[in-house]
Image (tube, rainbow, N blue to C red; front, side, top):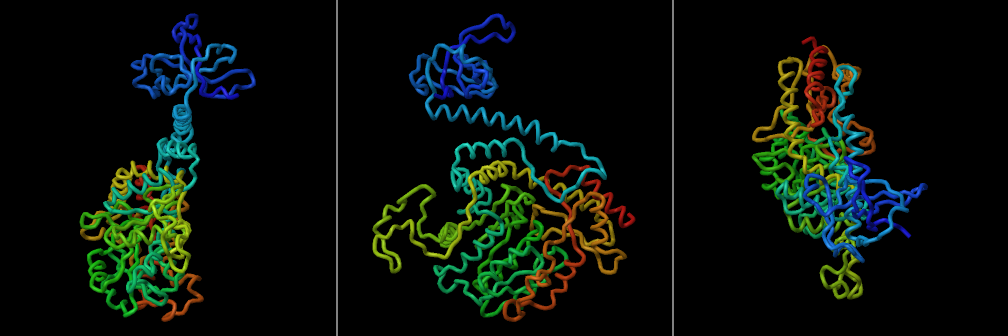
Length: 538
């Protein structure tokens, strides 16, 4: 029989005089090892002595068969190894709820120790110019993320759970939106956001196969992929080369009688001209999906990006503004879109019960749907062709910890952008990305575009930086239309474009970006500035 959770009286030696001891309750927290020893936590009734230490207090009511007549304090750090033969007098056993608390606390303390010993030294490792790798992005975390992760895993609630609900609530509060839906990636967020617009519940505003959606080719493919996968027609508009976002002067040229929506991203955290795009969408009764995956924390006219349109999307892949490993989210203020996205995220079901909960509506076996027999179990009624896009609660736990740090992440990104800009703004060969007017970007990266006629190529500069341990990235697909995935598609049928997308090709050929993530210190920023200036002879 397990000894874990049992409380005994044991003669605990004094720290300053091991020859003396006093009887104290000790709580067993391990199974016996091969030598017959057990790990125990020594308790005390003098909680004031441990007020500054992590501890738990248990009342006699929390101890079954309790022979103790007062509250007992168990400091988490007060662990000792004792022989089972020395534990004679049993005075109780913690109930299951109390035992769960103490064992979790012990595990989480060890998790913090692991972080301090293993991860923290690597994070604080001295930067050595030319030797240390300057990554374009990376995870920024401490023991909190690890503790929340372990806490969730110990509950072994593997799917959507308490941490998921907490994350959705906290992100909604941060963005000041009514509803957030946690999903398994930013790409899935875009998938869910677009497919929500295909719901028959939207009636005459439903996006149908063959309808057109305005977008851009200079970006990440999964902004466009859901449009194509559904059978709608993407209409590609060129970029402008000041803020490196959609050229809003071409929006009217891109519209036709079949246009139903606009779906575009904020480039590297820099908001597109939301005022112009929103006015265009409102004028023509078009849906607006903001791909906010690279811009979480940015604002336009004081309001968060991702909240101006009908649906916003985010990604929590490790290089992004915050992470949970794999993860993403959609968010909206529209009640009908909320209903549709909940259904489509969760298999397309009509039921809105949370995981593990039944009969929230109180009418599980009394309603009628479609051609089903009356009273068919509502949990298995499907109103959409949906997906299963949920994350595990363990991923959400990491996200909750990241959200607590998020404002500091945004501030550090802004500071790093300013340092890079100040260090490179005088280089005549470069076009540097400018912040959109009326915006405050939460920068994802620092983009550099070569002016026409310079004596070196983008790839030559990128290769030079890579050889000097500075990671670089192109602006994702550059021009998506020039990739093999469009080889089997027919212009004018499967997709359309407005003009020749000259600026998009310019970005494809001459633009790249370097990192500025919050884990990057001034020494890394200065090193990048120095190497870039060295290459161009400045």
